[in-house]
Image 1 (cartoon, rainbow, N blue to C red):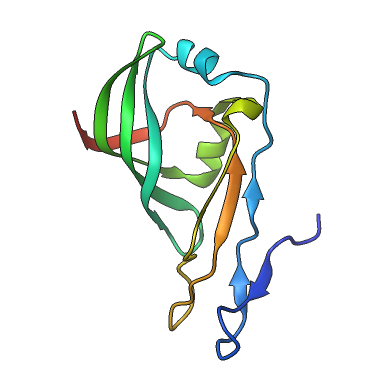
Image 2: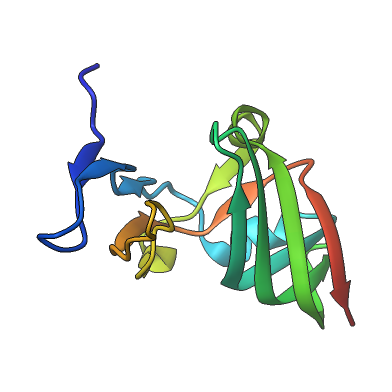
Length: 142
């Protein structure tokens, strides 16, 4: 497959640097309610608030503003500041289900966090809700 990343700069006076392409996950067939109903114990996470990815883009950690505990297929109490981490290839191999068009959304950030000095460039990803198994979830408070 030919490369899909590109080189861009934040302004005319910044050098172009390699950047991640906008990555998307195609919608599947499951409704969000059906996915939640099939989970015995988990955390439904919303609103990304922080991220950390190593230089080789292998290990990562993400934090969310809030989550909801899933018990026996039902959404229960709130969890503040839940986090999850993993190794990219293992994480994607544990993708168990993909939501349909109803849960599809385009998300993004204004700062991809690269460059010296740092350059702010918008990066976006489109994805439906997804169910991942065996994710290391930590932190948070009820």
